[in-house]
Image (cartoon, rainbow, N blue to C red):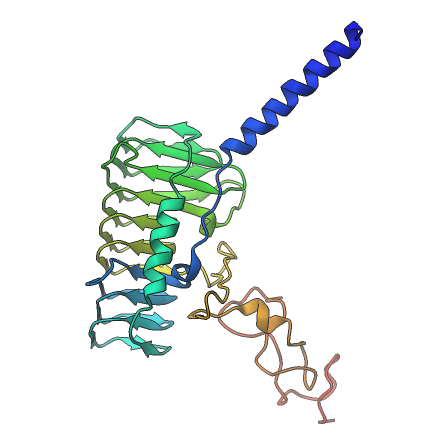
Length: 316
């Protein structure tokens, strides 16, 4: 082997090692199973509790125990094992009992799947008025971490996995805390594995929290999923679950049918069956969200005036 061949071979080996390391360190989003069908979920083996006051949740609510709703709006279904207490709240979907055991199993599996090798370890425990910027990968905090008046910027395309309390214990606390997707990433591609409790106050949170203890939110907005091994308590919080695309299209997480259960709404499935215009598909169907309006359809029904192009209605 001549010098050039040796140099070329060495370069290939180094390149292969580089890619091997990159792949080994890449974060992998967990399979959420049917637990992913919920925007809010309290999933201990039994005795779960979800409590909302003055909150708006777009997505399904689940509990292995009771659900207490006060002056809240649930745009979705409620699935629970215990009692439902409803005071001045509305539920757009159905109320079903019990919460399938598979939901708890899938939550536990997803939580364990987040035990991935750290690509970055951050030893700071408090960020007060200090910004933090991270790249896609597995970002680990050995102990608890607190964000106060801070902005967390996520670079890259994800996924991002944050592990809080990798040393065994640790809570996540945010006050006036906000998250920014630098490259317009998907909030549902962000995962927080928290060893203990998670608490957000007056914050703009994006992502999925899988907490080993309780989750508490006070005011602010929450885009993603709040899933806990203990109680979930929300007061004055606006929650947008991962099966909903909010204005601006920040969230694009679709709920699929899993294990025979389907608590969400797969919009893509309906889009494939419809076509825009009169008489050429089911009415009220938005084939491509072409007006970026997730709350209604841009399809026209049969009551439009004649002369408009592209319609096959019988009215002339």
